[in-house]
Length: 119
Image (cartoon, rainbow, N blue to C red; front, side, top):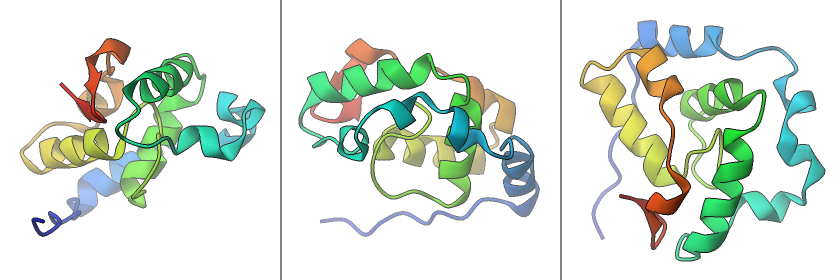
């Protein structure tokens, strides 16, 4: 097992992420209509992951959700249409120079999941 990568985000990028989080976003989230367990599928269950991600992609507060998950950072579950592996890649991209809008506006294709990892 490899050591976890650092989850440090430059303070300016962290501030930019925080500015993208709308107050009360959770009240508007589509996931509120589903049991909490639905958003924490087993990573190997790629069909369920793809279904959950598709719901997230249609959510009106996806950007706020994803920004919040990157700021915390959330360790588990689907947040803003991104798995933990997706979020780690987004944090890595931020550390390599990607802008916050580039990271938040990306879309994960539902059929790109295999074994819990986005292709």
